[in-house]
Image (tube, rainbow, N blue to C red; front, side, top):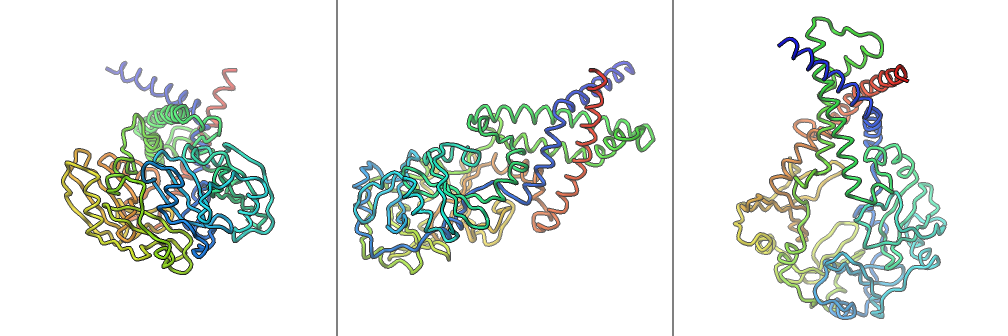
Length: 473
């Protein structure tokens, strides 16, 4: 028996050593880049940024009704989104088809908008409120900040610099002129040390989503195995009665590993799970069939007249034409948020009735009005939309939908697996759980402290690994 235990310890030791050597630099980079990400997030165009960048709608210039725009677009079904908003100095209908494709039509002439040129892109960018001096930076199909498939319907882009102090650059869809993304100099510089490093987000690799997922899963999986073996060995050493039998870098590695090893293991495990291996966790958005059932209207029609649209509140930057439960609704978006307008209205009962169609054959188990953030409705980066309705169904997946009762917008979908992922990722990876979830400053302090332990462990392990390799050269 002693021989078996001895061989097991030997294999644990060898496994930890070589798995650590293979992935030590990745672990070091993950802890360092994670700290950067706490301060600077990956570039994204938020709803608030889009509203701030938009000019108020010139409703007096609109000549086409939504119905006429749908006819001009030649659609055989109601689109996933139909928005009236400004395109430079002219109002336009922005259409997102069910397949994700985009098109834009002038709301004055009904003609399809022409592709962007350097001059027309500069004219659009000149309307942005922070613009000082527009510089055309040429066209780009895919780069570091537009690498994901979410941007595919909008490619290629024309990139323009606004000449402001923040170094803002805009990505405008060549086909429609749609603003797809804005970035600042701070985001572009710091994300190389932050999200790009943390997510292994190199453009040639990330552009191939399946390959990127496999690479991250394998690297983080091997690192996880190395961390587990090290954590076990660390406590085996402690059982000998001394705080640590090592000196120098080895002592630092041992003590930091014992003190922070569990954090490293849970960090790597949750990071591995965040890649959704084998599709274990359900989708977060309703699929096309659910959206169609919720709308209750698939035909390319919408009854609003021009005088109806003219009743939109002053300062409105966008009007969305939507169907909910077979009833038309016009939603106005402006600096104060979004709300029904133009003579249309929405009630919570109508939202609930429409939502029942998304899970045919399943009973609606409960409807809860959420007034404050809770364990399943929250936003780590700001304040979530409130209030929301949580609709829980008794289907096999135990599906929940979160819906904005004011606009009827479906804000999220989660099932049993998704709620498990909330604890397996958010609770373990970002410590967003329990008392820490309600105290962001305390949570940030704890994250920095445990990350510092992780950095000590990773740096010392990298030094030891390098010394081991040098002896074998």
